[in-house]
Amino acid sequence: MASVSSRIPLRIVLRASTYIGRKQLQGATSLAFYSTSFVGDDPVLVRDFIRSALYDPENGYFSKLAGPVGVLDKSIRFNQLQGRVAYMQLLDKLYKQHDIAWFTPVELFKPWYAHGIAESIMRTADLSIPLKIYEIGGGSGTCAKCIMDYIMLNAPPRVYNNMIYTSVEISPSLAEKQLETVGEVQSHFSRFKVDCRDATDKNGWGHVNSHPCWVIMLEVLDNLPHDLVFSPNQSSPWMEVWLKQNHDSLQISEVYKAIQDPLISKCAKIIGMDEDQAVKRRSLVATGKQIWSKAFPKPRRSWMPTGCLQLLEVLHWALPKMSLIASDFSYLPDITVSGDRAPLVSTKKSGRTKDHSNYLDAKGDADIFFPTDFWLLEKIDHYCSGWSNEHRESRSSKAVKKRRTITLDTAAFMEEFGLPTKTRTKSGYNPLLDDFKNTKFYLSVPTHHTS
Image (cartoon, rainbow, N blue to C red):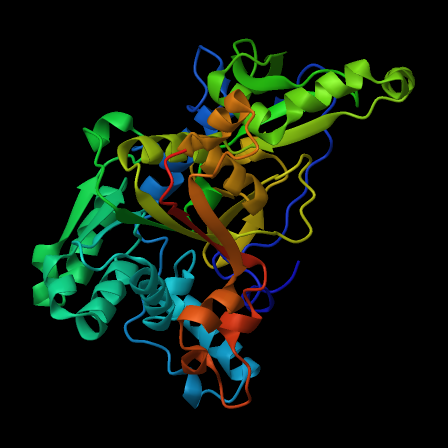
């Protein structure tokens, strides 16, 4: 196992975790040899288990840890560091001093990371109307404060004076911390508010807000609940995975059922799983493959971003004219957990990281985080905007997408909108540009067309 310091540069947001593995699960069920309060008498979908393991008010990972997100007392002066070795030593020292699970990029590179986001908003937004920004999962409030600082100093006074910045935060303790952080600048306080609620709950949004606005999601997608689908071989239909508690033992079993859940069905449709299955049934070559797959079965598992789908469905309903900025990891190296888009599961105690070989090992003390498939994110975004369905129904070659989207790696985004020189060391090494090659920014704005 690599040392903590050797893991930090590649996976800062990934809670300084190492890599985990899990044996391929075969047969009708798989077993975890312990009991957990997250699975009761009634079977639950995998997404419900993950949601409880992460967000349960009593036993969830983000509820039990008082301070998993680190807050720096002052900004790092990268220009005074000699190079990569000096930066690594400083980072290792900061982790030991704060004894926290992780530092987010917006914290490590404050204020420059958030300033790049603010600049991208100012260049794209219609500043003739009041600027409204929503941030989902605002952490300690650093992003909100730095964005408001930048707009106060660089935008026309009327833009700052009329802006409203709303944080939608599920954690009461983090909501309180955000008010404290943003309140360090007295003039920000009247322009900032925190809604302590679940952003995926449609009722929390009240009614449709048709005004243009911006939605920011930084390192949110990786912790959204996912579902799991399973197929015993290369040609059999996909099945949704449920979890049940065995009453005669301390075991949790995976149970496979035909896909009926609406969110899983939608995800399968967006990905194209249903179309792939139809093609296989029609193909003569597929007949041979079916015979081969039954003789030499190879189980398949795929993780479905149903939490992302649910969130974007609600956001597109509540804020139909929103522009979106999301940033997350597009790739996690050396994952051995079976299945497409598989997660990493990690526990950190007393400064040491322990990686689990089974996602069912998460009992409220482990982080569960997923790589983001940005190609799929774009498809989900278009689907939730209504364009995909209208395009299929009209079958018109002139159908125009309702969203303009672009995906940029972090270096490209910061070179376009930020100030890369501010995070560069004396040797030329730039941790923001050099160590975040597996992170991307997704920008999505509404077009002026209505069809």
